[in-house]
Length: 409
Image (cartoon, rainbow, N blue to C red):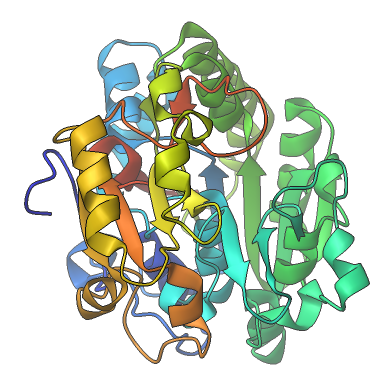
């Protein structure tokens, strides 16, 4: 993006995470999904058909992060798999955040198509900004699922079928292996219709469950999805390259090798494709109160409501005729640290995807989008203590580039 160093725009034409599930569908004998499949330059390295596809999604595992850890010898297991398989950089979607990215994964569509735009999102139908992870008003705490009292139904809200429903029609079984505490959450209810949920409480529990699924003599084709969140949790707490993050990923990898690879690899190879990927990466952002909106009352007067989306990609809802005043305030206060695009420009750029847009997309974007030009820049508006040392949501390459590491079992 011009004027934003080290930025990368999302790919929706075969080199992004929105393209993964359309290819999984093809590999398992399913039909087309709303988004395009992965580009032929990627899929040519794999067989045309598989009985099983295992997608391991490590939340916030950036491409450059994984490459550095491999080059430093910290994750030798994945280095060995890279040599035996194929590693590609893919882009995340925009915004590069979990609620939007996982919805793209679970629907095989782009954010412009499914309409889940950001961690926080203005929802005109309810007259409030909502939290897209916990399905509660954005300003509430401890009220997970509270939107149900306003008539919000996560199982029908998207207005499109998740992947499990498609695969069921096409004779493909869908399994989601996820932390036990996620069961029943709003986002899981939105994504997991017609999928079998397998909750785990430890890494050993996780890989034993996956092994049982892959070694099941059931002749039906199956999609097995694993979600692991610890890299994201530790990146938020300590920063992207913190020691705790790589150590946790190393332990996760050792457990995968010991409990699954050594057992499953003894079978006839070629039936199963394994894909390691992520929803987004992250950047290290030291806590800095100059970015706290509470300390800028003059800027707040120019907005009709608090920003939405992400701290690294704030959507600004501006009072009529105050666009230039907002831009001027940003430039005076944080010179050169933000670039602006408006709603129309974002749509023309296809920043959120291609295809027929969600009917409410324009209402959810905001008037101005503030794009940080430095990895340490952000805007903070929640009325709680800002403790995050790592963030995502923006267009920096460390947020946008994620791995796609594929190999056969």
